[in-house]
Length: 141
Image 1: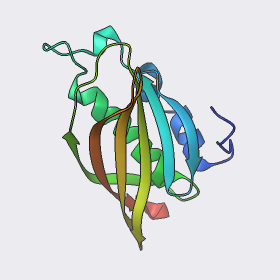
Image 2 (image 1 turned 135 degrees about the vertical axis):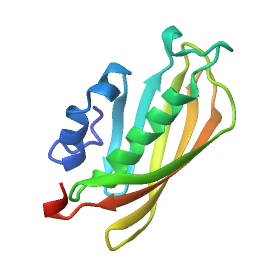
Image 3 (image 1 turned 90 degrees about the vertical axis):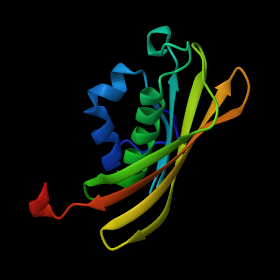
Image 4 (image 1 turned 90 degrees about the horizontal axis):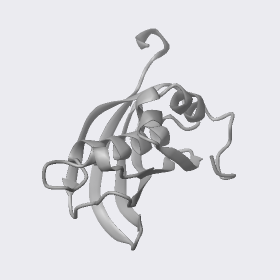
């Protein structure tokens, strides 16, 4: 993790227990209340039948950044709904970056937007994701 990540943040321990994100090679680059940056390199085995990154893996990257942003500095927060718009394909070997920013938090509900873009070999926007979250009460989870 980069220097921009406080190891005591609740989102760090959440991500440390996230085996799926770890298996996909995701790395946390930046984290703070309501924002997070997570990277993932597209591997050959992540390609679909059209030889481009399977949308499920792009969604998983965005969802992980969403989860980190929602859980940074607060109680356990989970996704209520999420949607994604795919804008461009990604290929094997490309480094994808998901930048999450909370747009609004009201009571226990929130809305977070995530932009997924390609850092390498050149910069291009890959997808836009919007997640709606719910912070759990202690007895909920």
